[in-house]
Image (tube, rainbow, N blue to C red; front, side):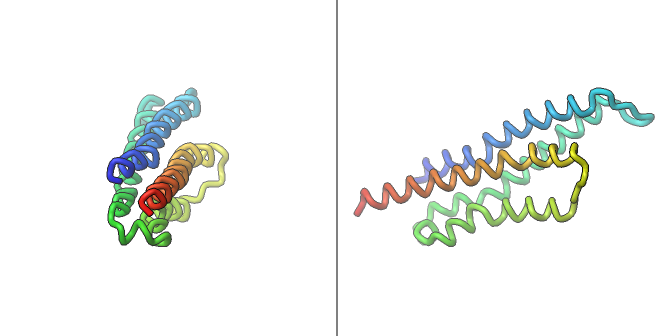
Length: 142
């Protein structure tokens, strides 16, 4: 069970982190290609966006650690607790970020989409995969 949890954690968080880092880097290069400023260079702006996505991914990884609470039978058998350990902190973080920083520009919407969509898909896919695995092992043991 613990091996399956590690695999689903990789699917839920680590692979989306890599995809997000690559996506934001490409987007930032394209978006800031003609950036001019008196104070900072375009390379520095691109570097800052990469640092931002690294910090964001790190926070998201930390907030997704409750997934490992599913190794305990009491949490694993309760669907509500399983869903809460999987989604509560990561989705709460996304909602808090969106509530604090509501952007109306198209460029910022694309940036936020690239930043969050891989994590949302990864969490949902890994939860479905883990639930199927758990249901299969539960039925095999019966």
